[in-house]
Image (cartoon, rainbow, N blue to C red; front, top):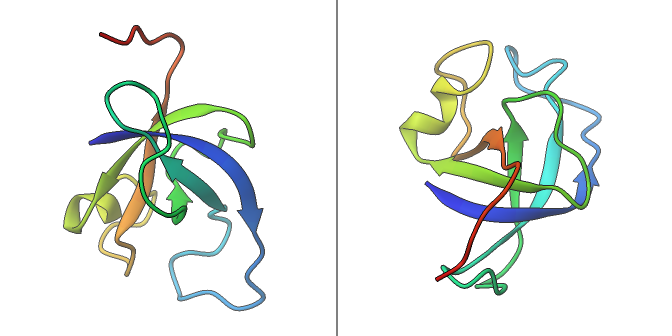
Length: 89
């Protein structure tokens, strides 16, 4: 699990069966101090509520598919929740 900031949206004209209605968002991963880390990534929105500017937590690999309404679809990154508040160390 990693924190990230939603910085944009992605529009797909065709989607794999089972991903209809799922939003794809551009997420900038953050390090433990809340600073950008690495390149932005595309994540499927498992919350169906995240939007640009929000702090979210994402999950990777096989577990990412479990965060979506239809299980075992081909995704490697999914937004599992929206963060209300976070303190950095």
